[in-house]
Structures are given as C-alpha cells and as structure tokens.
Length: 327
Image (cartoon, rainbow, N blue to C red; front, side, top):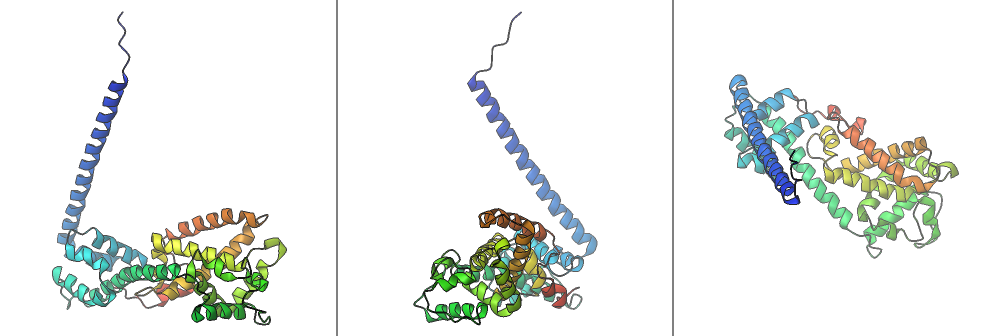
C-alpha cells in the first residue's frame, strides 16, 4: 500500500493563492451581474411607469429621511456626471441644478408641478448637511481663547444662567467646579471640543433653563453625582461623532424641512443631554468611574434608534410639523 506524500508548504501556498483568485473572480462577476441587473430593473421600471427613478422616489416615499436617503443614493450611484455632482453643489446653486436635472430627465413641469419642489427640498437637505458638518468642525477646531472678549462673555453668561444667585468671585475660581468643570479655569476643559462645547452648554442653559438647572441640581446629589459641564462636553463629542459619521442624517432629514442648521444640532444636543441624564440614573452606576461604560451603552442605543428611517430624536421638531412637500 502506497501512502500519498504529505503536502508541502509550497503546495498549500499555491492552493491558497488559487482559492483567493477564484474568490476575487467570482466576486467580480457577482458585482457585474448585480450592476447589470439593477440597471435592467431601472430600465424596465421606467418603461413600465413612465417615470425616472427620481420621480418614483418622490412619488413613493414620504418626505424626510426615507425620501432624501433614496435620492442621495440615486444621485451618488448614477453614471451621469451631472447627477453625481449635484451632491456637492453650493446651496445657492441648488435651484439651477434641479432645473438642469429636470431638463436632463425630460420631465414636464406642467404635469409634474411639485416634483422640482420636492427634489429641491431633499437636495438642500443633502448639501446643507455637508455644509453643517463643515460649520460644526470649524467651531470644534477653534480653541477657547481667554484673550478673546466674545469667548469670555459666553463663559460668563454660562455662569450667570446656571448660578444666577451666586456672583463669581473671580475669573479664576474654584467656583467653576459648582457647575461641573474640573478646575479653577474652565478653558482647559474645552480643549477636546473647542468652542463647540461652550456653544452647546450655553444654548442648553439659555433655551431650556429649567431643565438645565434641574439636571445641574441632580448632578450634585451624592447618589447620582457627575460633573455637569464635563458631561456636556462629552455629549457634545457624542453628537459630533453622530454628525460626522452620517448617523445623524436620519434625524436631521426628518426635522429640517430644507437645510439643517447649527440650531438643529444644538437642539439635538439638548435632547441627548436630557436622555443621558435619565439613562445615567437608570443605570445606577456605583461611581463616576463607570462613566465610559454608561456613555458607550448610551451611544449604542442612540445608534440603534437612528437606524429607524422615521426616527426624529426630538419629536416636537419633527418634519410632519414643518410642512414638507408631499407629492
């Protein structure tokens, strides 16, 4: 009886290489098949309905994230250069871009009077989101400057809003710890999020003062103690990560009728602060050392919520109340 010789290392390498090549070739043909199939289905759908893909989306999807996500995807993966470039036009050029798209698709405005309005609203959301990311990033990158009177005024306003009955003894003071900063000079705590953290904290204190004061009071209680201002800067970081990753598109496309603004992000921050406060109490951590665990768990919960295309984190700012055009 003759035994087969054991495979050598070179044989195994050759076999492995062949498997990789076979897999790559298979994936390539699967990609081509899916691409051709998708384009074929789009062609059939247009012939059957008499409408292009953008028309079908506007007629079949309700306003908000469901519609805008589909339009964004359609434009991004289009083989037409005009449609692809529409995603990066300046907001001032959106109206002309929509006119160009209507002409390209040979869409009759007389028989589709509201189509251009709906397309324009969605495209403004798309390009507005990109502009908003740039605006937020600029604020995040701007460091707090104690020599800048505007920065100092904002910081003093924050103190007055959160401690209206307690005059600040001096610019450098341990009193800052009373509203949740780590030391006697808050500027060092803004290093991670720059002016964005201060803007958000002040917006919360000014626009939802009763809630901010209640949360500050609760944060000072021994059982659920946390540093209010530091947590605010951390939640700013969470909101920022949701924005730049694109996860916040679902929410903003559902609450902003056209271009989302910095105010929408600040309203989202207020919501996240309140929800984190409730979540922190529910989790009942033994001490502040559990903050990162609780924050990560909270972050995952928000991400799950944003996977729902109808999700608006702040219901009272929902798109249904903002008169989005519905064909």
